Image (cartoon, one colour):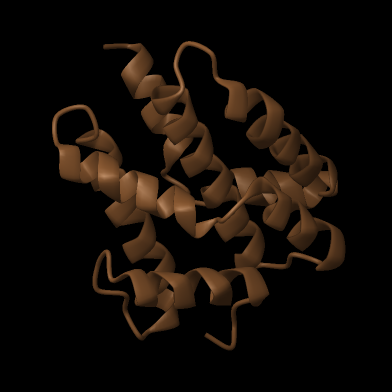
Length: 149
């Protein structure tokens, strides 16, 4: 995990403790396993109670938007940390769009302002690289999928 930043290491440690899925020791497989677990459970969220519980548990990994805002303010996210932060935002957005409908209070008051803060902190080149990251097949796609049903 030495190639990852502090945010990724925190997520890794919390996932190991929660034991939601087999967290690989190989750092290069960590992001892939994390996204696969999320995607599988997000797709089954409406039909399987366990999947809803798993996605909610992933959201709980990110603690609070206050903690995430502090990470943005006090630490410079680099490389994989940016990718994991974007994935965290995608997961929170997806979950709160489903769980809080139709009021979306937490989404409006916490997640969207946090996302704006994150994206505004990136320079244009970094933003392009992050949005074109091939491994980021996450929440935004699933939100579109659910809207088309």
